[in-house]
Structures are given as structure tokens and as C-alpha cells.
Image (tube, rainbow, N blue to C red; front, side, top):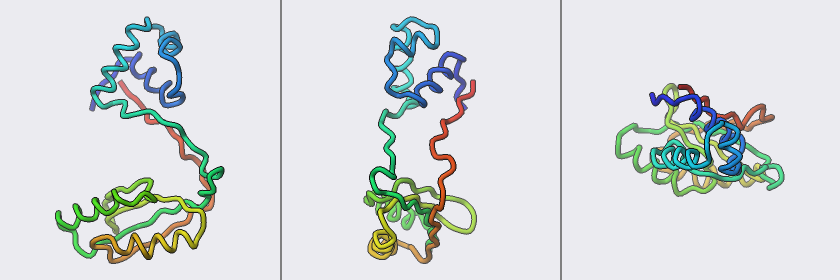
Length: 155
């Protein structure tokens, strides 16, 4: 596990809260010169610790009020099926997240939709055509409690 000094930990915590903070403001908040901050940020990006920057959008304002989690069970668990499945999922823009998991299922997919009809079309026309899918279970989220937790950065 990578070890980060206290300054780097603080930088990563701040950036997770405010990715638009200026280099000068970030340097001031952690107490180092702006040139040192630039070097640290370049290194964190080069090393793949910081993978990008983006805006968080409000799904409600976009009409994407229906959040679903889909459990997927495959009929076979071979490397070939896994690769074909991964490729199919990567081509589905409706998929926000997809995780291979241990336990009674193979994958857990997270998606958002405007309506139940839109979700049913996605399930029938997309998910059930993915290689190896033998069974699905859908969980519609009634209330989101927490969805923006930062990653904990330990030294």
C-alpha cells in the first residue's frame, strides 16, 4: 500500500472536496510554496494517484431519478466469458459502474434511468444480450443516503 506524507494526504483530501481549487489556494491551505505544489500534483498525476478531474452533476436535475443496482449471474465463469462480458459492458453508456464480486453472483452493475420503461428496455435489449448472462436481480433505490464519500488517504 502506498504511503503518503501528511502534506500529500491533505492535498488529496482537499482535491476530493474541490477539484477546481487553484494551485495557489491549495498550496496556501497546506502550507507549501506554489512551485512545490505544482511538482507534487504532476507527480501524483504521473503516478496515477490522481486519475482526472470532473464535475459532479445532480441526477435529479437531469431527470435521471431512477437509480438501480443489477445483480448479474453468468452461466459460465471462464476467462473467455469474463472478457466478452467486460467488453459488452464497456460499450453500454447506461452503465455507471460495474464490479466483479465474490459471493452468490458474478457482477454488480449501477445505472440511472429516467423511467421504469427506460430501465425495462435496457434490461431486455442490452443486459440480457450480454455474453453469459443467465440471471439478473434488480434493486431500485428508494433513497440515496450517501453517494459522495471521499477516499480515505492514509500515510
